[in-house]
Image (tube, rainbow, N blue to C red; front, top):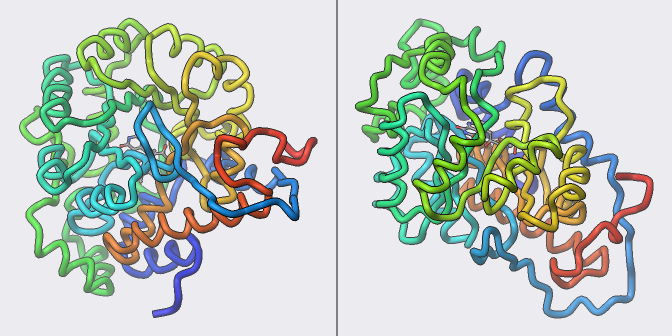
Length: 381
Ligand code: FNR
């Protein structure tokens, strides 16, 4: 196998090893994918100021996110169907994150359940919640997350309706995949993936088992979302969930300063500037472009995090310089998982850590406490 040196190498390997419908599920955005592309390309416009002859001994990437120590300010995003990129994917990713000292966030729409991940890890992971009409179901999920001692609840607000992703519809995305001739022919070229799946029982939506559901393919997932997700969701619900949960609450999916102010009023501990990785409102700003106005509006009152388009340690440093207390990576760790399982997630985190460390050194920085806009070239952000 060729040597892996960057996230793009992991993506290429994942594309070879993961069945097409699941690779496409990860590597796609909604409609024209313009926001998906901008999330990453807008990072390239921002330039650093290179500094020299600064003492670079004893460098550290340590920080905190919602008061919890992190070895670097990079968490793993909640991503649905992660256990379809690789057998037991959520467990493997959570274990890799735990070893690395960064948070793992389990999606409501995961394959491995809250209990599966809790049984296979020793430190608290975070749980992501979607708001559904069935409040009893939400109560049960919150209770399960509490019982698993999850360290934070990440409440996603940008998916009351589902953004259309063409590839998922064309591929007939489903979990487990349907055994059509096209799928069988494609899976026959992915023997490692198939062997992994044959070796696990975890092939359906682990957290929503037992809930009235008939999610069999993407069109039914879209119908299911319409049926189950709460179209009347309001900030009053957010306050109710905050009370019910009682722990650290992180609001995900904020792209507008006005919504950021409302998130502060709801009593949340942090918000994530996020457009769902370009998978929901195509035509929205990129997350990195939206970040500064939100930091200006609420940065002194709440921790501002961001996600979307981070593919390197350089991108992490740019986001932190623009005011993000922490960032999340979605596809980069999914590519790692699809490429090499748990070691691939570790590889992804290693790559980002090394890039972040060296880039800080080039900018004359020894720790993240001294990172602000001054490390960026004026006029480029
Ligand atoms: C997601 N995302 C997501 N968000 C969420 O709150 N709950 C979820 O279940 C999912 N599912 C999901 C699946 C896949 C395959 C992807 C790629 C993304 C969005 C995710 O948490 C995050 O916002 C983006 O992935 C960040 O962008 P990057 O890092 O992937 O560019």
